[in-house]
Length: 437
Image (cartoon, rainbow, N blue to C red; front, side, top):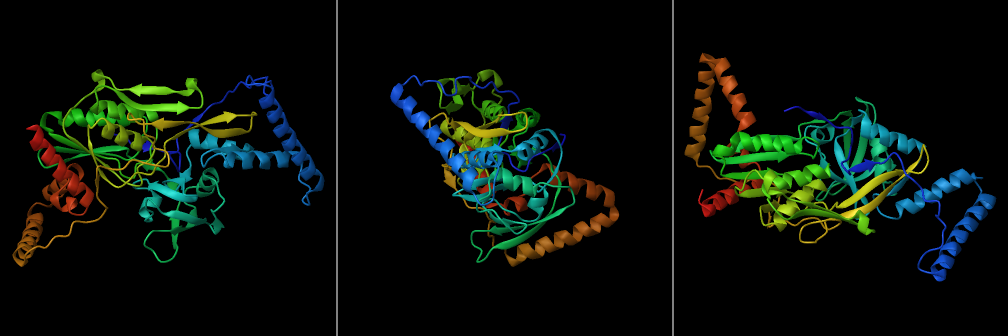
């Protein structure tokens, strides 16, 4: 499996549209009647008057171009947290984000309750290694307050040259005071899908983000172990989302009919429904899906759809709540707007936006507390001693075996370090028994 190089700090998926035909009848008479037309013209006249007064009297002597940019920024920022006006500089950065390679931290961010919040750190990235967690609120970036900062502004500041340091200040639940975090930017390279086995018949599949190869990689993993697999655990924790078609395709692997997700906007033409097909379904074995507060967007579509179809048991913590669709629409050759045009709805008709998905079984993250007997401890110590002695006899063979186990198998010791995963294994075993496998 090849690693996928990512070019974005966040995974608020954006479709960049490089051509837009503007209607010539922008100020045309509304079909609803003369009253609506009068109201519209009156509002436009008010806007023009304010611009004219500010241009004439403001103390900083701002130009009409600067005033218009500020007006557009204010309007777009007040629509919702994900809509904004992209200046020439911002638009150029966005193109780099969608087509080039850059240094970053490896986190996805969103606005939650008015605060710039970490959706999830991407595994193995500088942010993950520095200890950032889902739910952390970013208070400052290099001493600059984020209280009035947009997502795009924050991302542009956090992105930079590989090897350059950045200091952020976070507020974390349970901590008495803000925490300073020092991070060195790096190229974001991640493995989006990997699979392991638990016991003899349980397959564990981890999806860290939804890139263009997720469906193919998950299909390969399932097919490889299909003959011996009686149950699957799909781990979507701290998965910030990504491509919609990959989310739909992943659900289709487990569901053979019905709606997966629908996209609804202001107009009927914006509505689109994605359905499952039996020809793409690979398995019907029992399924448990792990989610938490870092599961957002595409991972919420997958978990929510599987829950609505009663195809999987969801376990963990409530998801982030990012279920809106943004597009980037150029307004000149060098400027654009990013606008929310639709929201996603699950098969039951419920929305994800600002609500999230609540798991069937709520389990907080942590370790499983165990109480070993003194005899067991002595026995473990003896075993470790014997393993060291054996290593002296055949060092190469021992090292090879240990490496293989760590890569392909989740051991009992690993399970006890992750209570959510341990609970999911217990549940999948029960489901396997109920199904009679």
